[in-house]
Amino acid sequence: MPDPKRIYAADGTRLATYTWGEIDLPVVVIVHGFASNARDNWVLTGWVRKLTRAGYRVLGIDQRGHGLSDKPHEAEAYAIRTLATDIETVMDQYLVEEAFYVGYSLGARVGWEVVRDLPHRIDRAVLGGVPDGIPLERLDLDEVRAFIEDGVPVKDSATLNYIALTQRVPGNDLRSLLALAEGMRRSRTVDPDPSTAPTRPILFATGAKDGVIEGSRALADAAPDGRFFEIPDRHHFNAPGSRAFKDAALAFLAEAAS
Image (cartoon, rainbow, N blue to C red):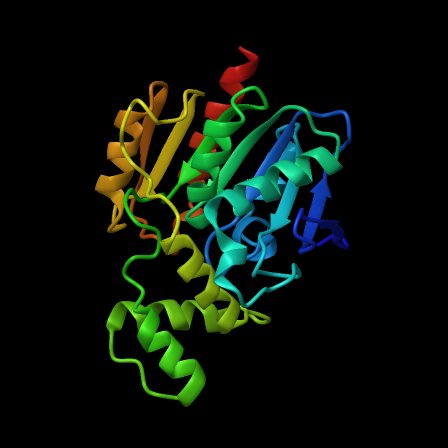
């Protein structure tokens, strides 16, 4: 990993960012999922290597609450508009006027907003493992809060999985990720409505064994220039490592040059 360059968001939150590749190459902005970071989601799975070999400059971000970025404990810091504006701020600081966008899970949820709000700056996007509906709705916030504050054992199986996912990555702060979940819950849902969908070309890609696959298909159907790729034999947590996913994404981005 290169050393991070820290950029200040509008509210003063410091965002850790990373770059790979030559400065004059086409840019791909990569945005990771919940409880992950740029290293885990994109470097260790081979995405950065694949993108740079294909002739792209890669701009990676640890989203607020993750990685080496600041980790606020207030839900207000994690509104979906704030997360999307962070991406625009990073692009501005790097003087990137136009880019491709690749996001997974939470990063894809943020990407839906970014592509919709910045169609003049995002030429096309790959959104992996993105469900429709309310973000992180299966997480029992009360159980997480009781676990953090009083050590009360968590009983809900989906919530246990989220906590295990959070604890898997060194440096994660469960309080900040609880705040993120609360902030996202207050944000608008991802609605498969063609009248509000992003208009730029988007590849939606979700694992064949992922529980959110039908929601992802619905979003692809709603997007005026959307298409869907089913990642073979993958569930939500191992889909980023799929060679088929990376190959489909690279082929989709390459269409912009043809």
